[in-house]
Length: 335
Ligand SMILES: [Zn+2]
View (cartoon, rainbow, N blue to C red):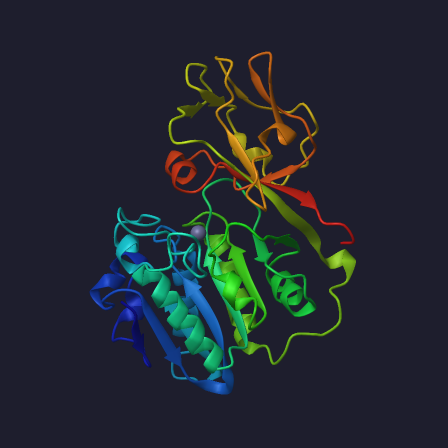
């Protein structure tokens, strides 16, 4: 399933994400040599509709054409077939960012095997650092996510944004195995197609490629806003939902995504609910259902019962169905 190549296919830097299938037979790992031998690893298009990573790496490579790279660079171009159709993943495919570690049910998938092969290869090459580039669908600040609270990881994260999210769920993400072998971040570069997300990602990748090392000392507290993802909130498949109206199982408020990264006071209304059943499931990091800890149904409204900060809220039905409604975060103590 995985193609491994050691140079750039002719013309690839002229192609949009949706055109990559013309020169790449499928998911492809590209190893490029550079002055420092321990490679920077960058994954793009794990989600086929999130093309800022490809746009940025393409621009970086164009800029460096004819020049020796300051460091070896390994690029994983992920879901080329879904990118062709502008979708997160295709019917019959797993989510390419949920198969990087064994999760019940995924162990035998060819995609799971492919990611294992990539991690093994990069470990062998003594990978310097790992960056996984994503977009999201709602209104969110640019932020970086880390799986471990280690100075190197946090320095890499704050090179992208002072807003950093420490997360342990969902399982199977790219950062999970990479965090065990090198400084590792997932970056969320706003919505696909936004020029400032592209420029910001390009500048970040350029900086990563030129880094000789990451500092050992802690990131100063005034340079970081650190949050911890404590739960994920999903709409069950049988529930109907929409925005603004009042006829469906869940009628979310308009401008729902304006609540992202804002500390919501207790009693904040997120939806109108006509019936007496709350069709929403919140699970904590251990997978236990904790819906009643965070939400109540009162006077026909879905209201918060604990202070928290949401991220990834979106007004996009497909994103909510394929991924989740949002993550719930708390400010991490000590930072
Ligand atoms: Zn994504």
